[in-house]
Each structure stands twice: as C-alpha cells, then as structure tokens.
Image (cartoon, rainbow, N blue to C red):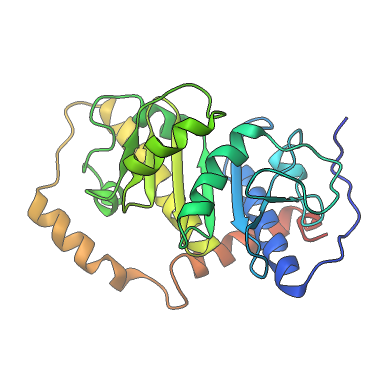
Length: 253
C-alpha cells in the first residue's frame, strides 16, 4: 500500500526548491477543493536536469504529498530517483507530451473540478460572460474527448489542437493549463476555475449577458495593470502558501 512517508532524497538545491514548490501547490489544490481522490496531476520540469520532471505518486491524496515523496521520472515515464511509488500512466503520457515538445511548458496542471468539467461539457465552452472569462476569450484551445489519456497516438492531436495556446479545456473532461513558472500556471488555473464557477452559477439564473468583443479587447489590454510585481501569479501563490502553512507544514519535508 502506498504511504505518504519518504526519505528526503539527495538532490540539488534547485531540485529541492522545485519539489517544495510543487508539493505546496498540491496542498493548495486540496485546500481549495480541487483534489480528485488520488487522481489528476501537476508536474514541473526539474530545473537542472534535461528531460526529467516531477509528478505525484499514484495512490496518494493531494493532502499527503510532500517534497520528498514526489516522483522524478524521465520523459518516457521511467523512475529516476528510486521512488517506491508508481506513477499514473494517464498522467505522464499527457504531461510528458507537452514537456517534451513545448520548451515554455515548465509547469502543467490538469484537474477534474466540477465547474471545469461542467463548462468543458457544454456547447460553446467558456463564454465571455464575466470578468475572469474575459481574460481567456480567444486564448483557450479545445480537444475532443477520446477516453482516458493513456495512448501515445493521441499526442499528435493534442498538440495540434493546442497550437500556440497554453490553456485548454479538454471536452467532457476538465482543465489543462501550462506556465513558464508554477505560479503562472497556478494563477491561470485559479482564474479559469473562477470563470467556470461563475458561468455555471450564471447559467442557473437566466440568459447570460455576453461582454462585447471591443470591451474584451480593452480588458485583455489593461488587465496586466492589476497585477502585483514579481511575475504572473507570484504574489498570489505566495499568499496561498502562507494559508497552507497555517494548516499543515508537512509538505516541506
């Protein structure tokens, strides 16, 4: 049976920092109600090792993940750190594809939130009917559901449908976001999740009001002016880490 306990691996300072940041992110997802039993994945590239990335151990809940028990695997899913934990094929097949082909995809997040799955399962997907949805107008890729993502041959279609975008709604499936940093990917996921939650709530009340294209363009032009310095999502993620630390600091181990 999988266990949350693990011996601290002998790794570089850069890898340990990446491990702690990723472990904190898993705990944040759980705190925000985004965990899905033992499923779903957040991955990051190991900063100082080409072709290696960190992923959650299959069998552990997000609330059990810490820096030590994350699994380091290569792009083909082979374990590189002697971890006793298995890795979910549905995780590394999809994530490895993007890590392999997209140099800017340092961090990839995939979730099955209720709101994300609901919006990905309706005709038209996300609509510009609220503040957060306007952030993503024209910037979301879509990929039709082909069943659980465990077949390598689906990769070409995923890449083709993604194109130059770094946010995707997997139809009938959920959210997929990528970032050049983990905090950037986190803030994308957070904002997309909020957009989906609000769209679901709005749909229950009546006919939604669509924001005009011209206003969406102004919004996207100016939204960066509301960001805190330090890089996309940096201050937001740091605030969430402080909240997690009030609950449990074991993710640091």
